[in-house]
Image (tube, rainbow over all chains, first blue to last red; front, side, top):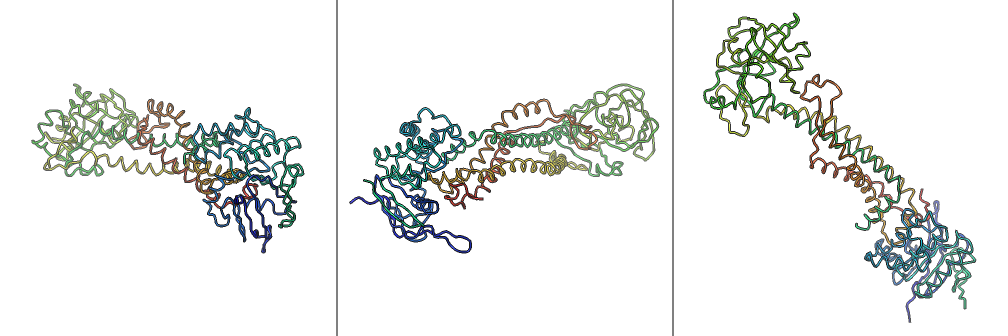
Length: 230
Length: 391
């Protein structure tokens, strides 16, 4: 049987708050397999971004275990966590987080620079990724000159260019209108089907929820419902 | 490292005006620091060159009682020229100087002077002694421009001088100013009158005697000469080294201010960058950079400022400094009043070593200044950085 991409057991995350502590995640148990197109759904403060950050090795659990691609996030050193993100994870953020002074090409090329690909390989891969998102005509533009939808498509190309095993998208459509949101979601759905990449969203946007094949509802740091769409 | 340099370059060029303003400030510091150091090197070289050409040549023998700072020693500071040096004297490779104290009376005023006797036909020193080789009813004399200006003396003017001969008897005679020279060497000009050696020897009844013997060849091994003390060129120019060392303290303060100005620009940019670019820092970490690598990237960015500044500085600094080195830097006031060997026009010297060492020093300091605020990144929480929430 294939090992799950993500395996979470009794995960608790606490943050210091004033003199006490605030518990954002209160014992989460979840598993995700290769090729899933799943979402963590819930209102603000439900813990979805915290969970996404832990899965993305940007944060560590207080107790419990989060295994991502066989790596126990709580046990990873900073270097090992960076290596996991560099090789196997892609991130898509609500506010795109593109490097403003870099061109579209340079933004998409960035993860490949860290992976030491040759210049010719990088060029081939960047152009392929930009083709997926339909932005080959904007390679020399800089993010401030692009629309919100175009920026998010660049962010998707950047997340996908190295063909990671897992893409984590935090509210990817929050700053986009309906047309752009659907366009982006369709792009991600296509990439998920064609490349078998696992997509995990943190969202409360109905447009995103409509595309998900698995919906995990979080409420006050707990899994409220875990639904599969047939 | 290669990636950090590539990214840092992209970040800097992409930041546009902000980068170029910093680079311009830093490049200005580069050029001014180089200019100042070049002036000091040039001054050092020029002062020593002038002193060598006008006064000390390859070195000197001083009469053992001669003390330039004690005029009372002059009456006894003379001895017959040692016969062992006659070959060098005959070949013109050694010039004897007889020195005594006296007074002159320009416009009826009494002025103490040093009277120096020097062979009119010498070619070892740059002094225009050939102008002493003339027949007049008065003694021919040459003086420096500094003294001529102070005493309002001109070529062709007669002045009375008074001196004591070897027996202590006062005597007086008129001298005729046959030339006025300008040397940039105060110790060769201030309060000094040059007469033909034979004339002074006759005036003092000290035939064949000298106080100082100046020689041409500084490398030749010098034997001990009875009654005289050997003064090498290094010993005689030590005062200039001392003086320049003193000047370097003042220069060092200006140097430090310029460096601080440049460093402040970099430090300020770095602090502002780290605050303003939190999301970018979070993004680097999310994409696979460690915090240490981000610190490295920001440090390289800061250091690259100085590399770009060196290049920009080279663009306008090279022709500018070349022009100054060629045409010199005219002193704004009469430098003869300084009492130190400084020319009216200074020619800075910019050696390769000076340029390389200054560039390396500024790049090194910029790197350290860039690293200092960047260390804060290592303490950042990447999830908060991603949201730009760090205060």
